[in-house]
Length: 557
Image: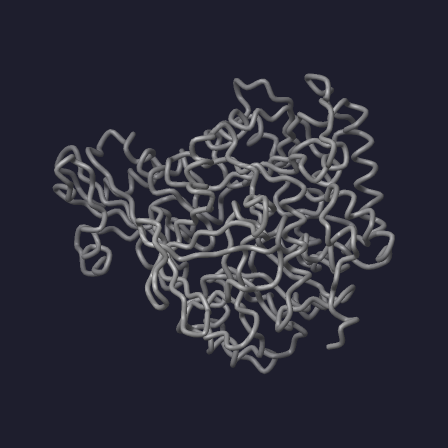
């Protein structure tokens, strides 16, 4: 590959100035006829969308038309608009239009229950919820009792903004671009405030990479089934494609049996994945067309070590394991994109990677840097005068949590890693009480709160159980109030949670116990549940609800 083929943003893009919308305008001037969004035929038919692609010029026209409507309705700086658009291109059109007028976007997880949506709308103080026509009932249930306007995405007009727009900051780079909710360890999801500069950080990182992940300007077509309410689809993949003149191939969700056919049909050159995806693809019957595709690399995280080399050998495409957080964005992302990649060892790259300049350390509980080979928590900060440059702007309405995660001027990730002799970083475990199922972060305490309201539950502890397909699964260890039929109580707990939580947060296992191990201060010692976690299949009092949970996925609204 020549130097001219590798994407290198122009000077204004490298500086990361202005809004995401301004980057769209700049790139449209260079790549007007290039595709920016592409839909496979099956997805196009599913969504009943007449066109299969939008060029940069066509996207800008859609965005400008929407921006004119928002501006006419009075929306601008100081307003937030929630978007319930699933994975569809219209989500990006509205996001970019709101960005053009200076308003913030609040993406909505379409799997949210009414209670979860109500919390998001209330906490974010969204002024407006724009939803797909098919999501009207869900939107109304979530907004009940709130002062938030609702409008379908196909409506002719927009409700007027409830208050005058404020004044934009002197530098649009600092303006709020999106408010994305991420699970934490304290129950309800926290709202991550993300600036335009944060999104520019994703672009800077992706366009500066070399090795197997080097982007070719104007040539890449990135296929992703990942959701638009996460920063991967909105930040990593979209900003990488936008800044390099590439296209984002949007899929409603992961379809394993048609995955390779979609890649061929759309001319995909790369893709983003979660650890569950390689496992499912490997389970399909081998085919002569397994290598009949144009994919140069896949980027993601969580592939099972036993699957890594096997996948690459069978399908002929490298899986580049990486790491990032909503809070770090492109400022702190890691990826094992250059050799040695240490395939099958959970290697996530090196701390001296290209991109926004950053400092990284591995420390023990006292904040002392650990020796090479020893596990330690990853902490990081931007290099230079502003340690928070390109990172998130803070947690909405939670200054205490913001300062806690930035303790000592370093962002504390809560993830344990070790450094190899060659400087490579290897993911070890999570310090936080988070369950990561199929790429979704689930706060154990949020599930515990839901189960705790069941009348038959006296105590509950929620922990992660290893799952060969999804990485981790939700295990609820329950002390019943009264002796009861275990299977009946487990089913009742599952149904109780299904009314309060998105399907992926539901317990995959419910284990019944007479008591939970506790400390002298009566705090549950979750570490003492490890023996149970390792012997779930042998435990007669553990009820496997995974198939029922998966069935819920198929009927989720």
